[in-house]
Image (tube, rainbow over all chains, first blue to last red; front, top):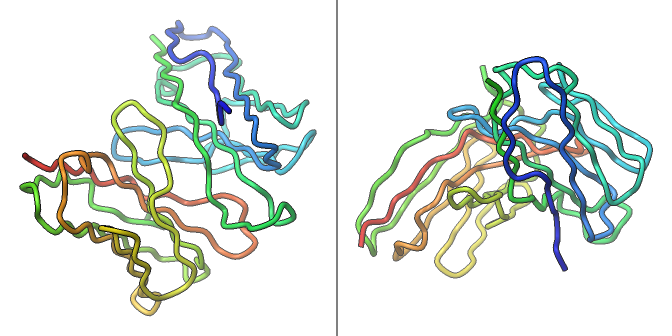
Length: 117
Length: 111
């Protein structure tokens, strides 16, 4: 039982390059999230999804796109990377209110460290 | 102004000390309050969860919520070196799907 798995764990990009971060969960969670973590800023929500085929913007969505084609996967894309997107990216998932005991607890992956030069 | 404020520390205490970690918030709609622990280079994991006001105890950990003051606390008794981590408070309102996090307090417990 892997929980939430993020790939890749590390990546270095040059300004203007594109890339996709993949998140996979095996807990049958309806909700999935992408956060970024920067020193002194805590975790900030980029995008989230409340079910397969649906996505919504979070607090800091600019420069990112997401897709949720399958329930277990949530992809985060950077079309044209900028140095300001250097960060640690965390994917998380949670149950929905319709899936039983719901507390809103998030289950996190181990993070993907991205450096944009 | 951030919705959730948390002192970043670092907080350094000797082994066995009582640790107090705190967050203040501005959104009166927040009803669900959590504390996450994050070890270096790992993802956060849930430590404590409380709904609305009151106290909750789990072993050496106690979470307190004072909604009238918009203030939450986490107390760690008999702190251990293994408690050294960053502690993040998180909260959400009814109907909100995502958590709002504090910036985290880094704790070091010295042997």
